[in-house]
Length: 219
Ligand code: DX5
Ligand code: ZN
Image (cartoon, rainbow, N blue to C red; front, side, top):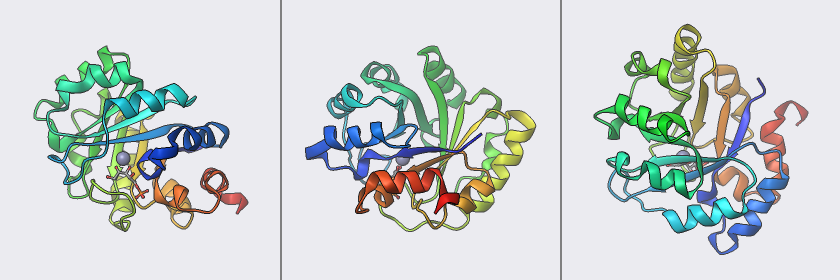
């Protein structure tokens, strides 16, 4: 499978969100990554339902919603209703992860689990068969524009191996500090969905940057 690109609108211009989404619509991007932060699970607050609704109105690509919030079970249906195609919860925020994953699937959404940089892939052994997606955080969640953590390559290889054994169709997503310099190495390590925020939106030509991330061999 060709890898997928999911630009993160956390780095978009919220005063011109429609313009930035239309750029994504016309680009080689596959999904739209939507970061929800509650100021509790992570130190930052991003945005909530009104913005997700607005994004849904203008985006033609699936919304990949990444919940960096405590007790996400309270809001799964609300995010589905706001337009989420996939919902990813944090392993560290879910004491009853199996129940949470079933609830996401019952809503008809793709179900994902995110791991913080310190959380080992081995903890997913008994849930991985139930998942559509695993998101490996390559920075500490909470902010865009942070430095990529190198141990991510090892975690992607561990996850790729676990997925080969137990769930070959798994989406293996990497999030944080992804750019044109590390994308090929990340794909080689096993990532097949790549989130990119600042590398896309801080570039002079975001659509071209997306094309370079999608087709790095053409660079
Ligand atoms: C960080 C978020 C990321 C963020 C990535 O907590 O989960 O999705 O938008 O931003 P960059 O690509 O700038 O590291
Ligand atoms: Zn994210």
